[in-house]
Length: 417
Image (cartoon, rainbow, N blue to C red; front, side, top):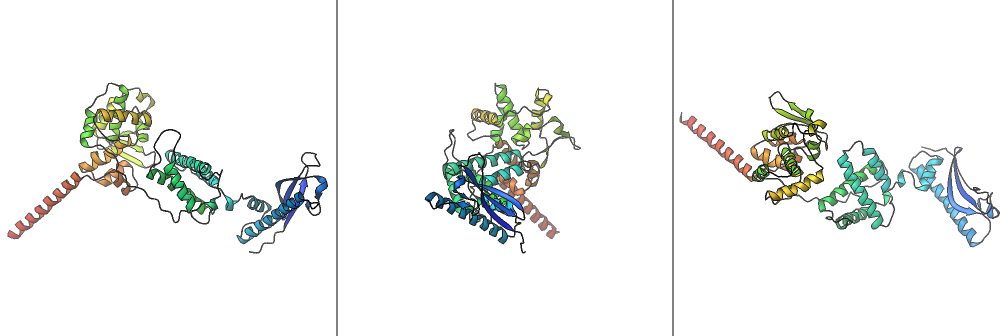
């Protein structure tokens, strides 16, 4: 499409301090009588300035260098106009100024992308997910400062090398507080979040090519910790003198028999305990992480724990159970596991794996039913949590053998008759 807009570039000075020895040099862009001005951060005295030419008078080295700079500014402004024309963009004084200053969509920086993503997604993603994005943001800021020695970087500068260097930084970063360095899967999770933000930049047309197109995330398969039936019984049968330990034990066991995550147990209220038409109590809730509706029939042991705390102070606030902070619970669980002779890394999330594996699947509950109770939208997600034990496979095959034998005997009997 032909563009008939008129463009004029004027280099001029302006007095801000009533000091004739210090005039500020500006560039004025005019398109169809609409102006945009840019301070060039250069200064000149009134006696050295030629208003008609818009340049410095004289042939001193200072004058030549300043005039050379002003010529370059003029060329860059004209080049910005040419770029916008070739891209079919709307030509205004402000768009030319933004392109010249590197403030338009073609010159967005990594920090601008992160800020845009976190601002627009804070009401879309769950708080826990946003917390992880904020963690990735902190690592990126540290990487820019420590490794690249830069305050920021343009998106068009992102390449395969940047991704590989960031991966190595994550793997080797030594935090100030004593803790483990980022594991392989931890590093991959940070890169996965960066990849999602970069994909957003591509969709917004802030970036022409995806720097991740030749990069592949490499997650390691991990064995998820769960309690066996014997270990679960050990915790149930062990009593603790401290009231705090007893509460943590009960809340943990409640999760083992319902499959609810920490935050879902913490947010449970008495009105979410519903008497169903089958005469049993069910928990009706929504998963905090995915917002998926979850309906779980209460097993007798879970019901006993609720009855135990039915008339406690927790009932005043409407909470179903007394739940401490996640950090405190995990600290107490470490002591509980040691006291019970369980040599495993036990956290509150171990209860969810235990429900999926030991309590349900190993007792013949179909994986589709388990998936519903866990609040998963995909069956493949349940297969990660709920492993089919060898004992269960053996039992299933024995039933199949018995069924085949029964069919064979029935067929032989029928043929004799």
